[in-house]
Amino acid sequence: MAKKSSVEKNEHRRKLTAQHAAKRARLKAEANDKDAPMEERFAATLKLAQMPRNSSATRIRNRCDITGRPRAYYRKLKMSRIALRELGSKGLIPGLLKSSW
Image (tube, rainbow, N blue to C red):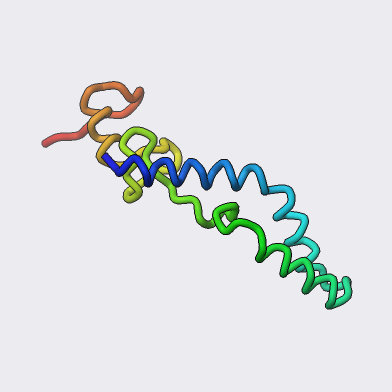
């Protein structure tokens, strides 16, 4: 089980990202607009830099919903390989068979 603070920090980042997504997208579009004057593009870049760092989507870490483990994460199932194996062995995941030979 991961530290509770790490899981909570990641959840806080998800909320900030959702909260600031529209504004970040607008500022990024202004900063990348090649037809706009250089001063406006630079101002948009400065405003983007002043926003909270944790509102950036790249700072979110994929973590297992069950254990909070950050490594070996399956995006489709939103869980780690260890949790997947445990639930699969118990027969709690439909269509998943644990092979043994």
